[in-house]
Image (cartoon, rainbow, N blue to C red; front, side):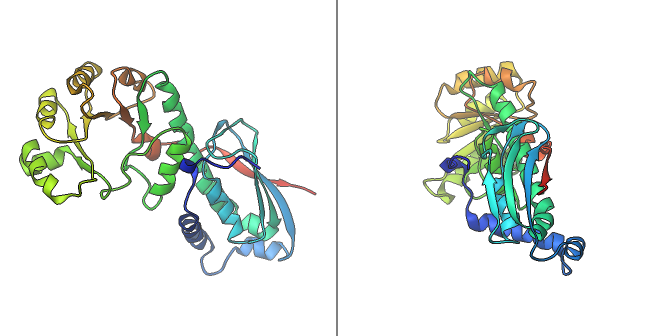
Length: 289
């Protein structure tokens, strides 16, 4: 068995069960697995292994296990490599034993969740490695798959990144369109503070140094430096001088993230972590008796 996950790598069991049950329901429909049920006796027992075809960072084993356990409550699911850990190509990630029907029916749902989340964790780990030696942290955004946000943000944490706000409800981010619609930064921020709780943080998106200067006149918590070139961003960090959190965003790639980190920003948000990862290639390999 793998070591117990850290608190940051735990998912609420009810959330996992609801999501996986819905995915299984989508796959099984009203008739069930007509292929497996026709071929396999209901009491047959089987063994299989989840095997990585390529190197990567593991994430999503709770969901993979749930796909089998919902179909067979007595299934045995043994984790060889835990979430947040690296696996080599050809490495065994987990072993599963239980009703053969459950293993075959749950296979695709288990791998769909697992491969997607492991792909996010793997990509995140590459960005984290690229900024090593700087103070910058790699964060995800709200560019997530609908109804899978909690899991995809979990995968970012498994890859060594941190989470930005989860939704529109847990932090204020005044973006360019808010500013345009409100008639400027001053008007937007003037209307904000009386309407939000004292524990809610405020971040303002700025594109120029003049906008930054105006934003810093107000009691805010963070500034998002949007699509600035490295030289301008470095000047922006110097202007802030530690008064608020600085976040860089906009078109960040593995090729550019290192130079961005060297400007001294606190956080670099990368939408590609969740909207453009390549799923980890893994498969369920049958263990013959």
